[in-house]
Image (tube, rainbow, N blue to C red; front, side):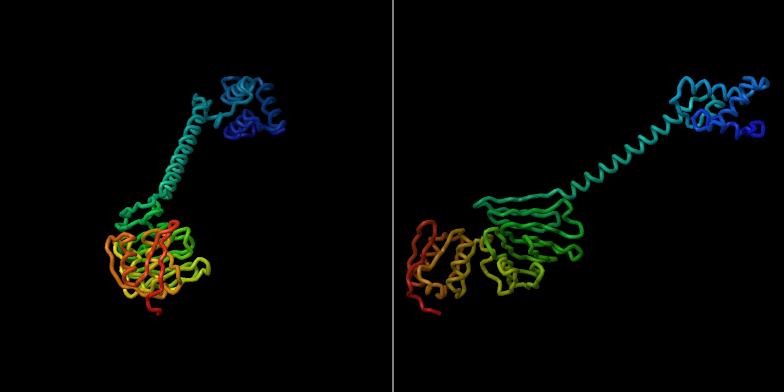
Length: 328
């Protein structure tokens, strides 16, 4: 058994505190009890005796109690629970601050990822200005999306359908249009991009500047050039720009000695209706004319007169008949 008389006040205080917390060994408890209960020289006037008696009583009354610093609480005559309350409040405040910080972070992330969507219906077209001052004309049956964080490192938009872009120049932040797995990257460029879900070709035509276009394989497309990505072969090729690529926007159709195969394709895109040649020979004919705000019937009347053929409208499609034009 350890001689308690050999302890200094600090060691004695520590031992009494351990007793109250239930951390003393059997030998240490026997030492305390033998010292204070068995020795007549120790009375309540002795600080150590008072200390031991106080904690012995408290332990019997509140066996589950715990003080942060029971010895100090005795001498200062302040319940140690105040220290516990202070620490608890401090921890609660810390949790609240962290929760508010996380809440703000996730709210900011959610806001940054919020998507703006512009949709057009059949026969509807619209014009919008993006946050970077880029102007976009959106054709019918089209969906354009961009995020709240649009103006960060990259200016990303997603397109399903057709749109004409006049991109505000910013060399530090590329402008990227995503059409499925195909992307069009520009800095300050004007171009028409067509990518409808029911078509197997994604068509790009650049009217100003240049663009980087493709999927895994990309090509540079300069002003006055076009590019076509074939989704069936997963290949991209460049060509001369189609003068009627953005006719839906300008309301002007221009044919300069154009093969009828290409004429009918442009008319299908412009009028959103099928055009067919009854005799394949007609597809080799060439046609030259310019139209402004013309109807399908007005265009076909001019074609009939120029090529000495006729047209009809059957089962929802336009059919051209005759073979009087010269074969090219």
